[in-house]
Length: 474
Image 1: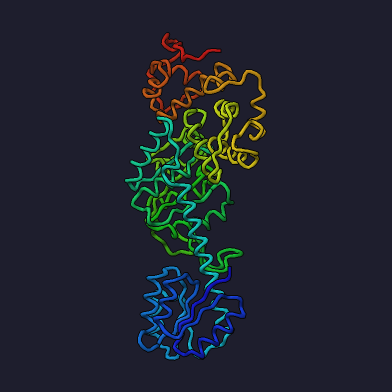
Image 2: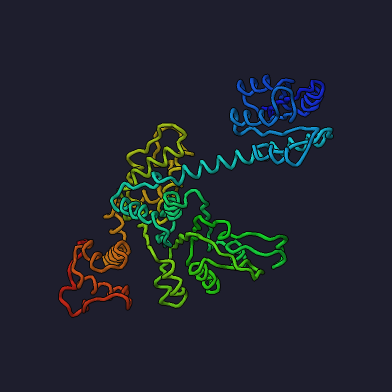
């Protein structure tokens, strides 16, 4: 469909000449010589561009501009005048005009301006659509909380959002750390400002420094102009630093300074920039272990770990799977009433999900794309799930994954999971496991999971209480 243009100019000949030129360019052009007739056109149908004369009898171009913006807020207005002055130009731009032309002007100048205007409008529309899609994808009710475990995670995140504290989100890849980070931002006082995300593990150190802090022109090959970095752009907003455990020791020092003082310098510049930014970091690595191994700075860890938030893996919250399947079927189904067969559902419930929610999302999209009807069977699932379904004795739920492991490995994983959920609080972890704190201490030593920050209260091997069962059977 051709872009539509409305011309309002009391000089009839001028209006006709402009219409003739723009018709030949392929635009759908309407020309009127009365402001009231022009407003009537705007009330009846949408236009992409309005060309309006500034000085007309009965109604000024500024008044037409104001009314046009009321009727069609997204219309692009180009003012035309033979009486140009800085004051009138500034006033029209303040009121929402895209640009202005001084009569007489060359038709090529008009054509270029209209093309630029339409390109800008198309880009703004595309950006608006992308923002709507992001809001849809990352809104709080998209964080599926069918299980009590995930409900408690979301409740904790909503409490965290009310503060300005730095947050460290931990969890395996694919569990939804960025989704949760966006929820924290979107429910915080900073929600009207920007949310800026970067994957620290995806960039080399030199490029990461430039992306985070910006650079000065000429500071390195390819730096052809001054450029603001992520922290500068996100002032008053939030920065999400994904894969924070991958940054180098040198970058850790630079990041520590920002967290301590909110200050930094662009690459190649000595001027100090101060910002007010909330940092939300995420990692799938054990930062505490990295601190003990001297590969991650202790002071940076404590600056990041002000408010820790752990997202458990999907295999520990099987009761979230039905709600996740329903959600992704709606997202990818295009309004069609898709559902999975009983056999497919059994595979979804029994599979170990090493890629967590991201892997499940991909599996649902794969099934919808390859479906030949509304009922999605095993044959529509990815090969990893189909292969799993062929394994003899495959079962559903936690019992399945335990039976695929040795007794000791299953017990170790249960303890590891409980300690993460309890944020290394041994008393709470022992309560979750249904054993004494002393027995938990024994097992932590047994599996090499003990570190010096834990107080085992003499929970060693010699203590008879260490042999309590966790309820795992072969």
